[in-house]
Image (cartoon, rainbow, N blue to C red; front, side, top):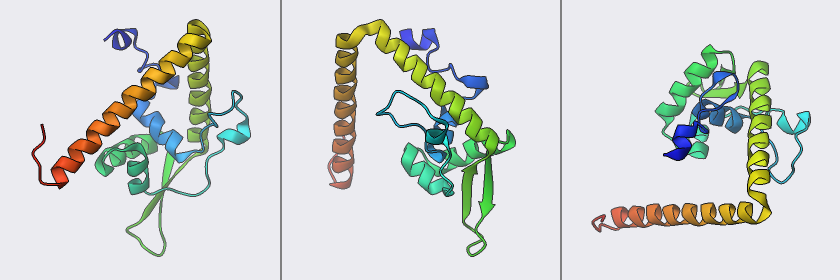
Length: 158
């Protein structure tokens, strides 16, 4: 609740929602998390197009959710749709030049925010936070896997 009050998840460049930025990052290469520098080459979009189903799988959200996000991003000129000439039902999505620029700005802002947090916490507390977040993530992933197993194994969920 404290994070929500601080509005940390709502702070995004140029007013775009975090969910929209996740789609943009998914479509672009993003930045390499193993480096602390952002080069323009690291932020160039992957020239291949992605289908809604690919984006949906990568972001772990439903295809209708992705479709709605894409509609908004397309209306703002951040992505473009291209119908496959062979299979007219298939539509590829890719970043526009404007979408690439927004992705680059968002990546720099995100990296600056994380760097600021790490400087504030210091090395020891940053490592503790990372460890606890990893452990919490593992707990929820195991819980979800257990629920899936119970569901598909015919057992009742608890």
